[in-house]
Structures are given as C-alpha cells and as structure tokens.
Amino acid sequence: MNKIFITIAAFSLAISSCKKWDDLDSPDFQVSTEKLTYAAGDTVRFQFSGNADNVVFWSGKPGQRYEFRNRTFVEGNTITLNFKSFSQMGVVDQSNIKLLVSTNFTGVYDAENIQAATWQDVSNRATWSSGADQTPSGDVDLTDFATANKDMAIAFRYVTSAVADAATQNRWVFRSFDLTSTSADGGVTVLANMGNAGWKEWSFLDPATKWTISASQLVSNRSFTELNDDWVITKLFNPNKVSPDRGFVLKNIATAISDVSEVYTEPGNYKVTVVAVNANSGGLKETIRELELTITP
Image (cartoon, rainbow, N blue to C red; front, side, top):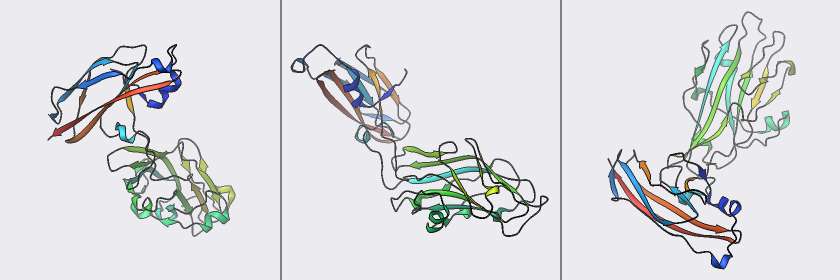
C-alpha cells in the first residue's frame, strides 16, 4: 500500500462539489480491530465501515500522532551533530580547528557581530581526523544549547598560531554535516545538512584564505605567508523545532477504501485516530474515531 501523507487542512482547498453546505452530511464512518491488546511485532488489522469522501489514518506511532498535527516546536529535545572531517596535506594538527556554538549570534556575518557573540568551544566533544578521510565525529551532543530555547549557530574556526610552510601546514575538509533534533516521543527532525546549513565565511586576518563552501563540502585554505583566523558559520537554527506529525490518506473522493495493517514494534499505548471528511466548496464536515491500543513486550 502506498502511503501518501497529507494534512487535513488541504481538503478544504482541493475539493469542490455542487452540493450546498446545508446538504452536506457528517461522515458515517467507523473503525475497528479484532482486539485492543497485541504483542510487539504482531500485525494489527484495521477494518473500516461506512462512507466518507476522504479518510486520513494516524497510527499513533511517533511522527503519526493526530494530537501533534499542528506542533512545530517542543522543549526537551536532544540535539545531535554528526560530521566527517579530513586533515589533509602537511602535518596533522588538530589544535588549529575549533567547533564553536553560539546562542546569541545575531546572524550578521561581519567582524563586529561575530566578535560580539559568545562562542562556546565544544571541540572536545568530537572526534577529529588524524589524517584519514571521512573520519566520523561521533554523536556530538549539543542538547545543553537547547535548554535556553534560543536560536543557535554552529561554526568551524581555522586558526593558526605560527606561519607554516607548504611542507607542514595542513588544511581541513568536511564532507558531511548533519544536525538533528529528537523529541522525547522519538520524532526526529533534520535541522541542517551540508547543503542547506546556510554557510557563510569570514576571515579576520587574510581574506585570501577564506573557507571554500559548496553543497558537498567545506574546505579551509592555507596561507604560507600569513596567519589564519577563518570562520565558516551556519545560519541560525531553532533547536526546538520539530516537524508536524502527519497521517496518511486511506481514501479520497476518487478512490475506494481498503483495510489497513500495521506492525507496532515498540511496547506501549498508542492512540489511533481516523479522520473522515465530507467536503464541498462551502466547507467540510468531519467525523473523528479513536482506538486505544496496548502493545505488550
């Protein structure tokens, strides 16, 4: 069965009818299961009766909960960063690369605003390349920056303390960057990846050595005559942002409905919601049915 995700608000835009609003009936629609308690891994079969123009099913699993259909942020998220680094060329020097986080950066990428922000060094939370390409950082926990419920920015800073020559100075390459937010109920929201993190560079000492930014990687550039202090910074992110939960369409006005099977692998209580809608150009009327399922170990 192909699952097409949709929000219920879309019905009012997509459907028209020659019926008048006064002639529109609320759907007479029911949902049932053989029982209300199943073991984890069992197949749960949902049966439907009655008729409706449109039917949307919410399984109650994380990401498919009707009560969270309009939720766009939540506190208490776990914020995790993963990236892959490469200390390339010259001699490996992990001291010249820093991972920084700020919750008061203005989002203006110039010397005054970057220096005015408070940047916390979290470099020791990551694993860095010792010369191998695609070295995983491991899960870098940034959850403590979400407790303030403020926008955050992440930066890589390439800074050298002595002028090096071509034989010794390394450069840094980052080929992946994934920042995710996981809510307490297990829903995962991708806050940023390498291609959409909104990277901006700023060089304090030698503009000729600024970071090179592309959709697939970040590359620091070496200088053999000047010191480096080069930053590359993400756009601002709300660490408490989550994607609204979604149901999937079982039926629209042009299709028939069929029974649905779901497998719940995690024990717990699940509220299953089915929203049946009749609609025309004058509006919509809906019927909401709920089942409380218990999944045992």
